Image 1 (tube, one colour):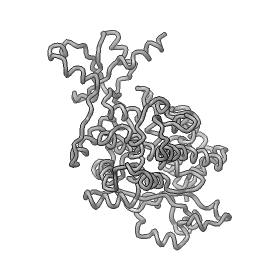
Image 2 (cartoon, rainbow, N blue to C red; image 1 turned 90 degrees about the horizontal axis):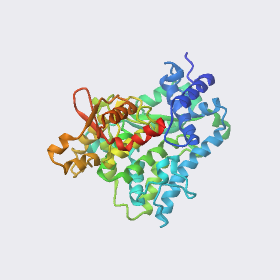
Image 3 (cartoon, rainbow, N blue to C red; image 1 turned 30 degrees about the horizontal axis):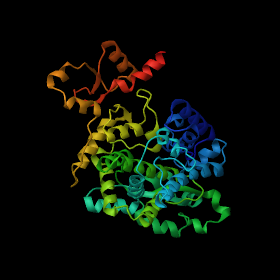
Image 4 (tube, one colour; image 1 turned 135 degrees about the vertical axis):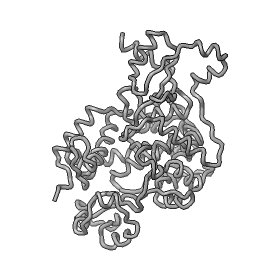
Length: 436
C-alpha cells in the first residue's frame, strides 16, 4: 500500500524549491506562512518535488513538523493575520474607521505593500467581507444551484480522526473528491468527524483538519468573485471579497478551527445597520463566480498563493492585475492560476456572466484609451503603436518602445484580437533605473 503522508525530506525539498523560485506580493514572514499551506496541496497532487507521487493524507501539520517549526507558533501567527482583519471590521463598526487597510499599529494587512498607501472606503470593504465570507458556505452554494439552475460543488473542512478514517477504508483523496453529503451524520456518529467540544487531549494527535466534499461539481473561481464584485459594485468591495478569501485560506491551520470568514460576515450583518445587502446578493455573487461544467478546465481559480505570486515576465501579481482591470487601468496580459490561463479569458468570462444578470454594469475603459476617444481619427492613426504578442516579455516590449519612440503598446493574440493596452510611461522608469 503506497505511503499517504509525504516524507519530511520531500517536504523540505519542495519548500526550498518554492522559496527560491517564487516571490509573493507580501512580506517574507507572511510569504512563508502561505507557502507552508501550499506544500499540502502540492503533496496531494504530486507536484514539484513530490514528482507525481500522491501523498493524499498529508496535512499542514505534517508540513510544519517536517520543516522543524512549532505548530503552536505557526497557528498563532496565521490566526493573528485573521484577527487583524477582524479588528479592522470592529474599528469600522465602532465608529473608528481607517481609510487604509492597515492594522492598529499602521502595518499593511496581510503585508500587502499597496495597502499602506491605498485609500479605501470602509463601508465597501465591509460589504465585500460580507459577500465573500458567505459565498463559499455549503448552504449558500446549494441554494444558488436551485435559484440559478446550475451545478456547483461544495463541502467544508472538519476535524477528522485519522485512525477511524483508516479503519473505514477512507483517505484524504476519497473524502475530498467523492460525494459524502448523505453520510455526514453517520460520520459524526461513528467518530470520524470529531466534535471539537468533545475532543479528548489524548486523541488530538490522531485528529487532522481535512476537507470533506458534500456535493460533486465544478467549483467557484476566487478570481471571478473578486473581479465580478469589483465591476458590479466597486474596487473596495472587491478588496473585501479578497480579504474574506484570505481568511478562508488562513483559517484552515489555526489554533481553534472555525468558519471564521462566515463568522466575520455574520458579525457585520448583525452589527452594521448600513450594510444594504442580504443573502440574495450573496447568491448572485456565488452564481457569478461559479464555473460552468463545460469550462472547469478553462477558467482560472487562483489560491491565495497564486493571487499574490509575482509573474516573472510582467513583475505583477494577479491581485494587482485584477485591481487594474476593475479600475480601468492598463493591465498586463499574463497567465494566471496553476492552470496558467490567460487573464483575458477570465475577464471575458466575467463579462459574459455579468451580462446574464438583470443589472446595469459599467466596465471602465483604460485611461490611455479614454484620452484617444476625444481625439480625431486622423490624429489617432498618427500615433505610434507597438504591437506585441501576449508572451512577449515586458522588458522586450519596452525596449521596442524606446527604440521606435512608440506611445502605446497593444497586446494581440494569435488571431489578432486585442487583449489589452499598456501605457509604456507607467513602466519605462523601471527599465531606465535598471539600466542605470
